[in-house]
Amino acid sequence: MANTTVRNAQAIHGQNPQFLVETVIRNRIYESPYWKEHCFALTSESLIDLAIKIRFVGGVYGNQKPTEFLCLLLKLLQIQPEKEILIEYLQADEFKYLRALAAMYIRMTFQAADVYEVLEPLLKDYRKLRYRYQSGYSLTYIDEFVDQLLNEERVCDVILPRIPKRAVLEENGELAPRQSRLLDAMEGKDEGDANHDRSRSRSRSTSRDSRGARFSTSSRSRSPTGSRSSRPSGKDRDRDRDSQGLGQGRSRHTSPAGSDGRFRSRSRSISPDRV
Image (cartoon, rainbow, N blue to C red; front, side, top):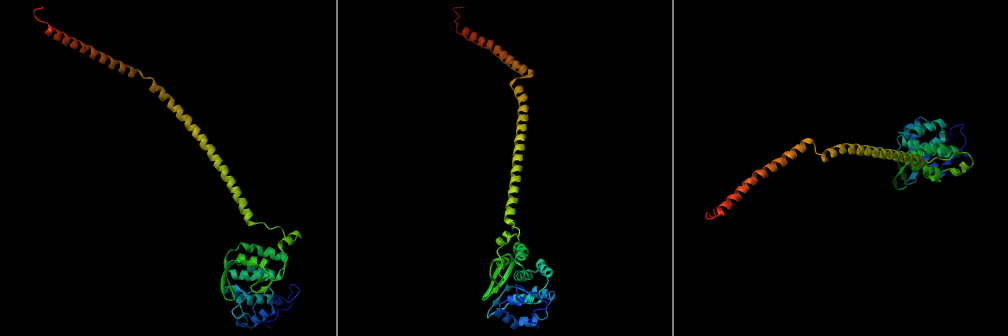
């Protein structure tokens, strides 16, 4: 009973949903202890409690032992939850392994156009994921995991159903052209550079105007002082005249002394016989 699909389940890609997992891997899942202990009578609600406890994604490891991620994926194929529930799984941002599980289930069961519309927004999620392979662990990211789901043929040791390329769906009108986030970022950057250049040109023009105004005001302020310094005032003229008069008085006053000295020297040189 635990290994059968629920009643009234819809066929996926023309077959039983469980058959999307290969027979060898499916039998190993049925025989695993995790499947027998934890996956019995799970529902879409109780499965969340197990999904949030997952610590890695992957297929089989070691001696072909299935991972918990693969066991829960097969359980989702059995119970076949509604689309609204799967969207809620994807919107649970705090549980990244639950999001990865829902993304892989959507890739295996949804139509091609719906797969691209639902999974492409997850390419913005750059959180880390631990991936377990045959001999150990490796580090990946949610966007890389989703990119593998959209482009690779096998993920987690499960062969994915074939879907057309996105370009084909765009040509057929089933999908709108994808808008690149990088192009939007570049356009926003170009607009920011243009606004920055405009602000710089405005600042330069204002600085030039301010410099011209300063130059004009400084020239006006300097011109009167220059004229005053070049032309002496009346007080300065009187001071010059007084200094010149004092100099002349001194020279006139000293000249008789000089003449007396000359006269004296001459009178001394004359003999009394001539007198």
